[in-house]
Image (cartoon, rainbow, N blue to C red; front, side, top):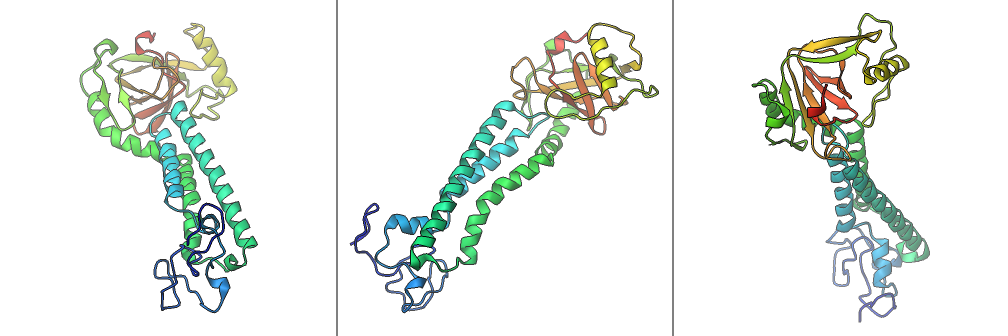
Length: 307
């Protein structure tokens, strides 16, 4: 007889607490499946016949479904940061999956602790393998959060993209209407441009304006001095105290598809030798990322609309 559902019926008299292995015919005092020791004369070291299949399952450590859910959440989190900006849609899906994982993991943990408290035969301490199976799923998700916070996915994507993009950036000029889409690790560059002699504007390095305070993956957060200059420039004023026009010998802009709410907008990599550390093209603010490469803050409007 075996347990059916949650109804208690007679089954094998001895099963392993950790892995539910049938110990009835095992001569050695140790489970051959997971290595947990047991004593035939101590009912607290194995699961007896009065425990249902469901209670035995609750008492065990998480299995492969929990690991798959944790790995899925981790992959989605890393994918959301794999580019010059965070994709709001992909980030939302990743967060929802991780929240679902957290809720299921917490419920599973509480249920396991409860069943081990209620059933005397399950009160023995868990082994190292069981603790590892409990710790590994949240550690996987936590590691993905940490890597995203440290900007590792973006750095990896940029390292993989740089070789492809640099060949275009250092090649012949290309106007936006002549651009041919290319594929990179960050995502598709469905539109782009490579210009010579483009005029951008930046803060005058000799002016005593307050410098940049903080920038995130959303709209730029500017210092008060930056904000005043930005507002006046956006209204069409060409001469603003504390700002200068800079002519770039080469500017290549590569907006990455999927990094904004609308296809007409995106965040971008840009290549600009000898450019200031921060400059503005149209309404897009660029900040130096690596060497002559820049990353945008805010969204890139259609390149055809640049002034």
